[in-house]
Length: 359
Image (tube, rainbow, N blue to C red):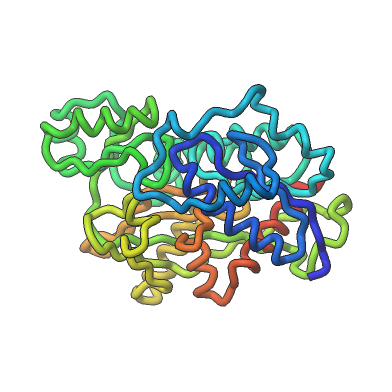
């Protein structure tokens, strides 16, 4: 690789997925440095980190429970504080290793657009649409991508019984990593589940529970200029093609949902890439993932999560615009199943951003 870039990796933040973001950021920082780039770690809840701060922040792993919202911290002073050093450092690229909340809902993307510096992942509109589960499902329906029936709170147990049936999944409308999510089997447990979800978001979704196999399919765009971007200033924007990566299956070791602990604790689940599906089934789920990516106006990369019911029907549950990049995350596993190392994946995400949003 001949290109060398100055990359600021945005991580941490104040969402309930802060710990996961730090774990993703640690992996990304290491990969970018191994590729020969000049890299800064930037915690948007704090500031640009020096070496000592970086080492201290990266030391803990992901705990079994998400951090309390009050413990995640608040940005110090003006929310633009972390942007102030970007021009001074002559940053070429923002790499978003953020998850949930402020980092994934379009607000950070809007700020970064104002800097004129390219960033990885989807833009403002796609990020905002995919973070809002209600809007996501409305657009999936329009694109003929099957998704479970749902209601938005407030809802009564009678409405749930008549329109969805039991059990149901209750979850915050704008959260990821199954934070605040409950499977509710009895009407008398609905109010407690709604209260838990409201701790993380004012809008709460009640969704039909689909029993079956847990599947996932990342989507990754293909840089037009595969051999490198020799001049960032002069790079010509081009429309990349899009490919679906290997379909994976999540096999839970306990419980019935791929929850926060199962995602980030060793032994919580076993991920199999590629999933044991027929060729036709694999093509079908890959097509649905691509259609979801396009319906939500996403760019760069995404990951669609599905359930496969007993009849073989696929149901799209949600779309992740900044899927995890930890050592255990699904996107890197899917890429590796197709012969793409973690460093190659990170390099590709950078090239897509530089190509799509030239300075």
